[in-house]
Image (cartoon, rainbow, N blue to C red):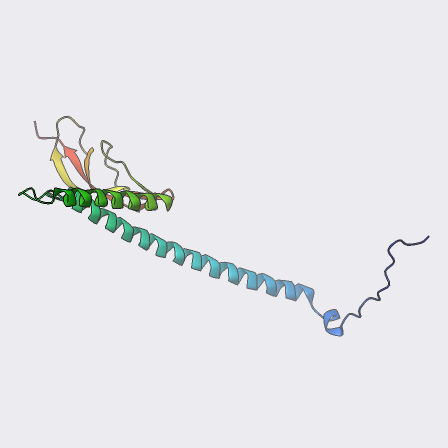
Length: 170
């Protein structure tokens, strides 16, 4: 029978060192190296996650500052004498656009704001920093978020600081 694709090459000789290798020992050494690498990668992943968490918390501080500026009395308000009201309006719009941009970037990173208003206070999500007399709500119901809480990847990134209702002794 005539071979259509004959192999004309001669096999290379196997080096003596390759014949004497203890395959079980080499495989065990590879497993040890693989395990060490997995541990190092996991530690680096945890460090990167912690660094990203710190960065996102810093961005939330910036968001809080912008919110305080926007909500401050007289923030971007026109001058009392009526001069240059266009500049004040441009400043207000610029501030709002900056807040929206920051919110979009946080959202793209998986950070979402908690909506706790009207919900029973949950000690896992919020710290109670104030109480308010409210006969129309059950006790310990969140009436206002003093500092917003945020989720990141399904976990609490930052706990909220809330005001809750309380009943009078009536």
